[in-house]
Picture 1: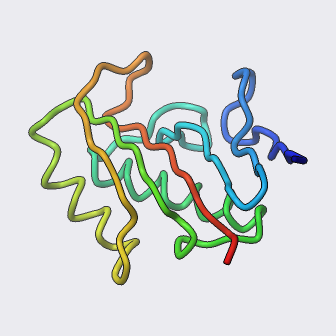
Picture 2 (picture 1 turned 180 degrees about the vertical axis):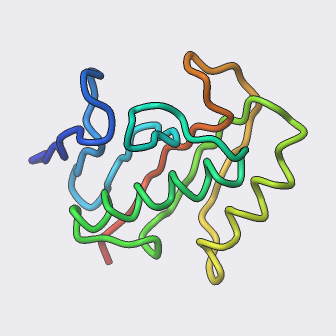
Length: 124
């Protein structure tokens, strides 16, 4: 199987690709809400969620895919109390069919409130 590596553009210096296309699947690395200055944006978990989806759209377009191709989402929240605000923002991006997902509370190695990674399927 041939794999295509979508080079990291979002955060310089990290040893990862934004995404890897392997066959009919696209594996998108964990994403946090980095602003143009390279720092986590302000505004809370809903703002961070929307920023991640804005960046995800750009990555998926580079892979000739869209949100409709997302099959699975893994979500890491720092604060359990952010779950409802996160869900409200998340629903904006999946008005129709919803991907499978898991949401867990976990610590972050950076000052972010949320990190998400995605698996998309582009086959038939």
